[in-house]
Length: 379
Image (tube, rainbow, N blue to C red; front, side, top):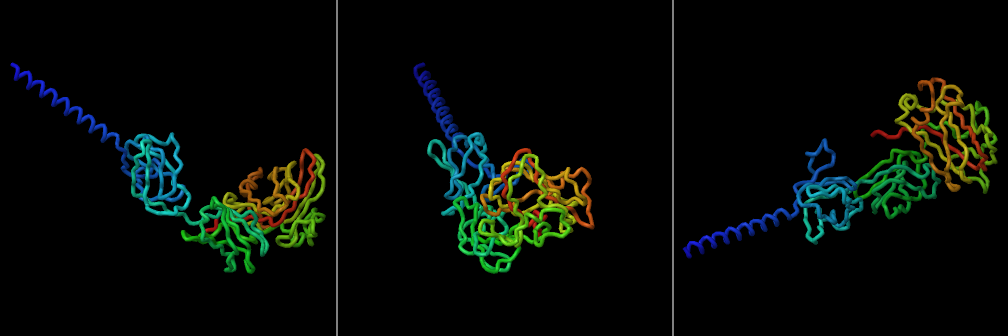
C-alpha cells in the first residue's frame, strides 16, 4: 500500500512538472514577436507583399506579438510610430523620408523590454519631385527657388538651353532648392538631377506659352488700363521681369470700381482649356509692394463677351513683400463662374481685371504675364 501511494504521488508530481514546463514553454513561444510579411495598406490589394518600399510610403507589418513595439528603424533612420496603429498582429508605419547614411536593408523593431526583431526590407530612395517655383520669371544672376521634395546632394539644375544652374543649395527638409540662374537660360522645363534619379518639371521657367495679358505692348483694343502701364521702371518700382507690366498704386475707396485692364480680346487661350479646364492652370506674376488685404479682384477670363457679373474673385490676404511671385489658380475655378456652357470662340475671349471692395484699400500691386497652361506635361 505504501509503495502504491508513493507511485501515485510520483506520477502526479511528474504530470504537474510536465504541465508547468509545457505552460512555460507555450507562454515563451506565444510571447516572442515575429513578422510574417510586409504588405501595402490598401485592403483591395492586401495580398501585394513587399520586399521594399519608397520613402514616405505607408506599409503594414504583419506578424504576431507586436503590441509592445516602441521603435521601428529602416536602415539607420527611425520611423514615427502612432500608438493607435500598433496591435498584436500588425503595425502601420510610414517609411522615413530621410536618406540613410548607412544602408543595411533591414527593418528593425525595438520592443518595450529592449528586445529587437530584424527583418530584410529595403528602402527605395525617391528621385526628385518638382512642384512649383516661387516665381517662374527670374532674371539672370538672381536666385530661383524651386519647391518639391527629395532634393538630395549632390544635386544639379539644368535649364532649357542646356545651361547648368550655379551653386544649388537645399534646405534641411530637402524640400526647397535654390539656384542662381545662369546666362543662357531659356524658357522651358527645368531638369533636376540627383544620385537617385532625374526629373523634369511640369512647369516652365520664364513660361511664354499662351500669354494674353502682358502689357507688351498695351493692346489697342483695350478699353481701359493704360494709366497703369509701366514701361521703364524707376528705382522705386518693382523690377521688370519680362518687359512692360501693370502697376496699380493708389488709394481705392470703399465700393469704388476700378478698371485695371478691360476689353482686350485674346485668342491665346487653347481650345482644350475651354473644353477641359480641369487640365489647366491660370498663372500670372504678382508683386504686392503693400499688402493686399481688402476687396476683391474680379477676373473675367475665358468669356467670349464682356460679363462683369460672373467673374472669378481673386481675394486677399496676399503679401509678396515687394517681390514677384507666381500665382497659380486652377482654370476650372476661373471657368466655373460662368452661368452658360463653356464654348470655344474662334474670335477669342475678353480679358478684364477689375477691383471692387467694400472697404478702402491702400493699393500697390503689380501684375504681369497672364497665361493658361497645362497642369501636366505629357512625355
